[in-house]
Picture 1 (cartoon, protein in one colour):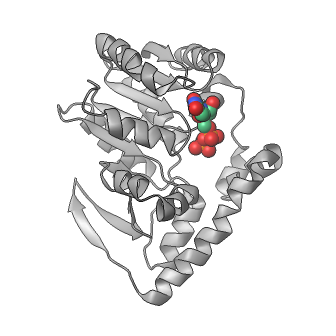
Picture 2 (cartoon, helix red, strand yellow):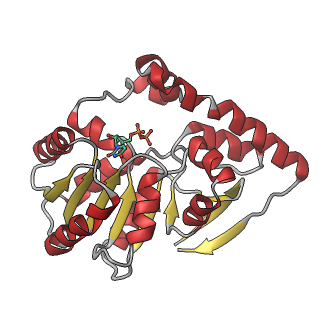
Length: 253
Ligand code: UDP
């Protein structure tokens, strides 16, 4: 399979729709090579501008899905036609519906202890036959990381979901990838909060109108400062376009 990769301010974004991303993950789950998937939104890309380590990590993943309408708009300004926004949460739900009642297993790492346990219970109820073999909260000290990795390796899940917030989750995945024996690792942000039911996803109409960000802004006003990065992102994209730095390539997946 080959998918175009857009370079957005130095961060590669794969031009995949939800079903194509799902197809890739299902393929990755059958392979023996470890795969890393990230879900960049404009905030990731803005952070990568000032954090070269983060930018390098985002350049070394196997798949970066366009998680945020801002990414699709930014890409458009640069002349790329991304097929659609692919929310990491939706991708994970699709994966669950495809791997339930198979031998594939999942581990959840992230969020508070109550949230991650509740997320496991809710997902097992929603996707009967889904095998979530373990959970760990995301509030651990760096030195406790190896104990968690040992536990994950003992359970040897196929899929590891890491929701520690960005960029902590991407850095944790990248720095520990060689020690963790799983097939696929995905940075999932606040997905466990939504899976547990503690945080509601926007109503469908907001998602359809690409206004999920607005819903999050009015329901979680503490995110306001973070969201200021969106207009700044568009300004950066416009500056980049004026410089004419576009660099498109097609890679084989
Ligand atoms: N989190 C965590 N450990 C930390 C900091 C955050 O497990 O040290 C969790 C937090 O509880 C939440 C998620 O990481 O579940 C981050 O959520 P956020 O809304 O910031 O992520 P987004 O979806 O916006 O990327």
